[in-house]
View 1: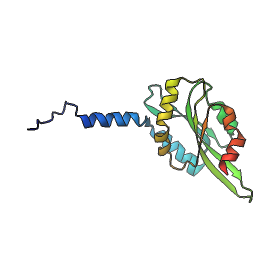
View 2: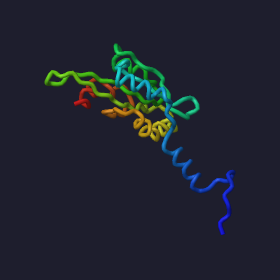
View 3: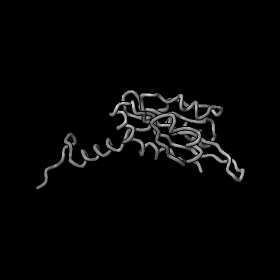
View 4: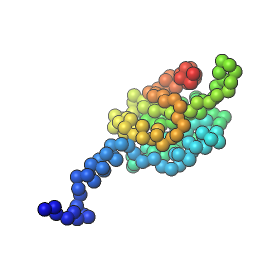
Length: 157
């Protein structure tokens, strides 16, 4: 005979669900999605830098760079010793003289950042990226040389 399940008890399926949810990544603040939509649809920003909040519970917007800023400004916005996510709206002209734009997702993970931080960012990356509908190219970078204009050009075509 089955015993009734009390609400204050923890069943194995609930426990499994909690573990799966925590393993799948960290929450995403709504402001991240809204800023990304502004970059994608209104083209208000050249780039957006995202970080994990101080409690390591959710991804939040750290900085949004104006349309007049460049990939160099983006590079300067990324810390030398901590991980970040970023999106960059790269405008270019094709060989056929057509103006185009590609939205890059950047996973910034410098060699000098803490191992635990690298693991948190790596395990949350895919979930966060899925929240940003419209990413066209993914770039993983550990230093500024991996985010040069030549790299953007090469990956955009």
